[in-house]
Amino acid sequence: MWQRVYLLKESKLMMISLFVLCGLLGLGMALTAGKFGSRSIYLWGSAIGLLMLAFLIMFRFDEFTTALLVAVHLYVDWYLALYVVSLAMTLVLLLSFYWQRSVRHRWVEPQAIWLWGLLLLLTLVPAIRGATNLYDAAYYYPNLIVGALVTFWLGLVVAQNKSSLRRLCLVVTAIGTLVALHTIIQEVTGRFLLASSHYDAFLSSVSNYQITGSDTNRVGSFFVDPNWNGTFLAMMLCLELGLFVDCQTLLGKVCYLAEIALAIPALLFTFSTGAFIGICAGVVTFFLLVGRSLYRIILLLLIIVTIVALFLLLPSDILLQVQHASGAKEVLLRVGAWGTALRVIAAFPLTGIGLGLYTYLVNSAPYRVPAQTLPLAHPHNSYLELAAMAGIPVLLVFIALVGVALRAALHNWLEADVRTRSLIGGAIAAVVALSVNSLSINGWTLPPLAATGWLILGAVASPLLKKTSHCMQRRMTKTT
Image (tube, rainbow, N blue to C red; front, top):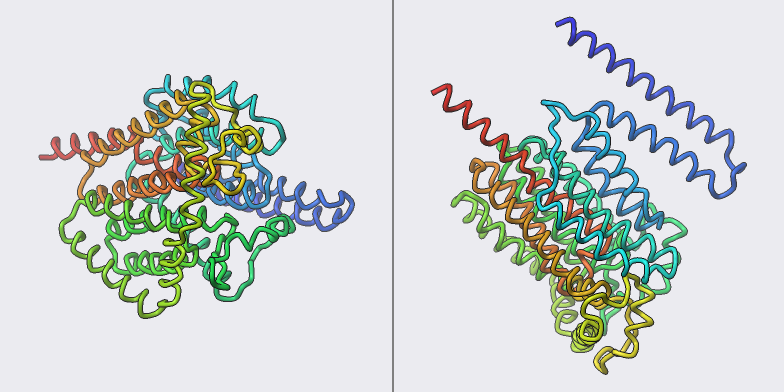
């Protein structure tokens, strides 16, 4: 009892200290405004961010802090183009978990760690060759290779049990709901909330996201590109379905239905054909893994109601989506991009031409097929992108890593109780949606999408979930 009182007093003291320090930092920010030029906001923002991260770690808000990395990846690193802030936060968080490991907070290492070592080794030379500028140097190796390992590892560690997995998915979907709201507001009002000067650099390319034969612009939100936005929303929709089935309270189910109701029109406003194919694959996967026959019927009814509602409420948007999906020009360009990538792979099967967008743009030009009418910085296919830029061995290792993780996730699904199966099934469905969508865009090779995918995959593949399930079974056996 005295220990609890001491911890309560200590928590209150830490909370008061946090508010005092934040107040002092805010005061310092106000007093020094303009003295550091345009870097002032970044300087003080970094100080406050580091302080908040330290306190979140000290208070052990593990799932919230981990899920927050998705928002940092999207807004800070991607939209504001700071590139490696989330990677640094991930490393700090992973190291803090290692230092604080205990019986209560267990530590675990990735399965097939040698495969991760092989990926780091095989991509080193292509990354050096492709790092012709700061953007490409920060884009591929730090974010997509090293970032994949540490983010996946973090997902393994943070999923200590099914409750922590549930909390992680809850916060991630909350971020997804905010993105869906931002997408809807951008579509309805034409205003981009929380815009920055960096967004102005993309305004010249907005016309590329206009549906041919109409004056309708596809909405990209903080992703800028609607295809990436659609992929993210498709993943979130799968997670929301898993949480909806997993939830046991009526109010909770209503809240998750509200999130789903926001995600569906937001997904439609991206007019992303690949995202719709991905969500179809994800929903089919979830249908198979939902764990309850009753919810399979409910899911079918939900799909029918959604289709009818979209045709009644947004008929013009549905027609525009069909028009966009059947556009021969875009399909021909996409097929041409794949054809070019296949010719590059045939010319450089083992080492690729270098992990870099500018490198691919320049060096793939001699292998460009006539169907690719425009120069492209990547082949609009994550798997062809890895093979063309880094070689076929890298692609095989990547597929093996995803396969090993999915196999572990399926083992966790088999050993979970009926309720938890729906949650794990929703997470697996989200990874399937990303993987299928990556056939038509650079999903697994875009930092914010890849980080989200690896985090979710690591959480559901965590061996800690299996250990927790075994412990519960042993306790039930002893009680009986």
